[in-house]
Each structure stands twice: as structure tokens, then as C-alpha cells.
Length: 468
Image (cartoon, rainbow, N blue to C red; front, side, top):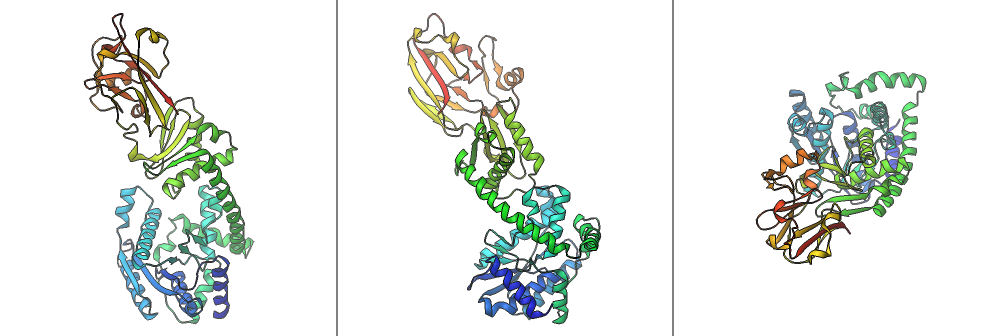
């Protein structure tokens, strides 16, 4: 392919996907390999026509010793030869991998994208161009298919992501780029790990792709076209699912959480249920890495289970929790104290914001107004004169003790939970109501002996918790 033809191919890609507008300030991810070097040259060639400003960034992953350092030196020299300013940084990918418990490939990817995003923000750039090609597209789709994926994975690498990352070479073949560089007599770096067959991606590149090309010489183009079809359909599903999610969920910014009514979720077709769960995670986490089909199925099974309380730790900081007939997604750090402390100093209605707008009703009643033997699980009748206001509604704390009604003596709340066979994940969600001196009610389970109704009771403190 001639240089002019390659220019037109890249221009058509840019126009088709609306990647670039006049005045854009673009950061080029320059690794030093043939794809990123060709990307830099092509954008430099097209710069006058596109009316853009170009910058480059190189991240030394520190994974290949001297070879990595030489890559960084090359990137600096090449960028300077192209009269493009460059930012270079070195990262400890192995430490990041260990800290976040990721595969080496995933750790390197996250560190690289963090670096590119930070650099673009610092330099006030509005686009980041990466050198992904049609070959990368085909390999990515095969990789996802082998590992297991849905339509999102089969859609492959998006030409534009978040209106920030752009892939101008996504319809170009690697062979075209290498030919282009040779014609211009431009050298590039070769990553020695690209021939290491211990990496699945390399097995696909060097073993599987050649076999597929024997069957269909245009298999890369065929896979890329299929990805485009799937990507368009996936975009429809994303918008459709997003509308449904907005209708059946309640999103809170502070504290950050998303709550879905389980009956509404389970009333949808299974395919939509799965997409709703994915969309909920993305809403909080902005990504879905590490949360595959099996994890989503676990969440749906949890929703269908008989238990009223359950939780699943997802990738990153997000937890999926079943609480009665609601499915809540929220950061793990917010789970330790799901019940905010609430002071109750007089009769009235008090809201518990973190539990789906549950409310507590408190009132004083004459002794015969309530039959304390026929109360529901979330109702309590207490001898008002044995309670010292204000009351506090809070969650379980280590060291809590009380006198369980009918058991005699004091007991650690921890031991009470064990004896009652209350799972550990449920315990933080059980409201504890105290007066100034003591616990008076483990909501839904047991009153304290010291506040029970007796024949001498003159006033009843009646408490009821219900969902608004």
C-alpha cells in the first residue's frame, strides 16, 4: 500500500468514528514498537490537514531491564526527531501487580492507562491516541472468545472510548504499517516478550492466526467486520439496559450506592438481568474487568435464594449485597457501618437512610394498648420507665453485651449471634437499639431482660421498624 493510500485509510477511519476535531490536542502512546511509531509518523504527516497539536508519552514498565531502558531512550530520540514533545516515566509494574492481585498483563495495562490519563490531564490534552491495529482487534476477539466472553468481548477494541482514547489505526494491518516504515527508512523497537509463547496472546498471534489465514487469507478483515456489527448491536443494548436500570434502581452519590428491587430485576428476561448487573457495577466502578459470567450468575443466584441477607465481594472495591428484597452495590469500605447512628430523644418517626429509606416509629402507649405477646419481628413493646432517653440506633460493635430476655445473665452479643446461627455477613445489618446505659433491643431477635413488660408496667415504649 502506498503512503498516500495509507494516509487516506487512516483519514477515513478518523472521519468514520469522529475521532478528531480541528484544534484537538492529542497525546500519542509511544512505546517504540512499529505500531506506535507508525501512528506517530502518520499523525505527523496528517497534522496540517487535521489541524491538531501532537504530544507523546512513553512508560517504562521496568519489566525487561536494559531492553526497557533502551526502549525509553529510543522513544525520546524519535519524538525529538519528529519535533514532538514527550513525557517519559518509569513504573514498578510488579509492585502494582502484587498490591492489586492482578495478572502481569492486566497490571501493566492499568499502570499504562493511568499514566496516559494523568499525562493528558497534566498537559491539558483532550485525546489519547493508541496504536491498536486490525491485527490487535482480531487477536483480542479470539483471546476473549477462548477465555469466555459475552457480546461485549466479541465487540473487541472500540475505535473510540470515553471520547478520550482513539485508535486511528484500528482498520490498518500490521504488515501495511511495517511496509510504510520501511519505505520511510524509519527504525523501531522490537519487544522480545512478543515471541514468548507462555503468553496466550502470543500463542494466538504466532500459532492460531497463521492457521486461520490458511483457511481464510482475509480472516483479520472478516473478524474486524464482525466486531463492528457486534459493537453496533452492543451499543443498542447498552442504551436499552441503561434506561431499564434507571427505572428500577435508586442511585445515591453520597454514600455511593446503587439499589435495585429484586422482584423488578427477576421479572426481566435472563439476558437483560445479566446486563443490568453489569451496568450496575459499571455505574459504580466504571469498569467490569474481573467480573465475568460466573460472578454475575452468582449474584443472580443470591437474588433468587431464600436468605434475606447475603453478600458477594466483586473485583476491586465493590460489594453486591442482598438485603431482604433489594440488591445493593456499594464500595466495600462503606459496609462496615451500614446503620448510621441515629439519636431518638422523643416520640416520632426517624429515617434510616442507608437501609432503603427504612423508618423507625416510636411512641408512648398505655399498658393495655399493645399485646406484647402478638408483636411482629420488627416490633417491640418496652417498659418505658426502665429506659433512659435518648435512644440510639446503631450497628453491632465488638464487646457489646446485653441480657437476652428469658436466658438469664449477660451475654456477649457476638456469642448471641453464634448461638442464633446468624451468619457473619448478616450481623452488621442488624439494628441495635440502646438507651443511655445499655442495649435494649436486638431488632428482629431479642429484647433485653431489663426492659421487659411486667404487671407493674405503667407506660409502654412501642417501637416499629418498617420500609418506607
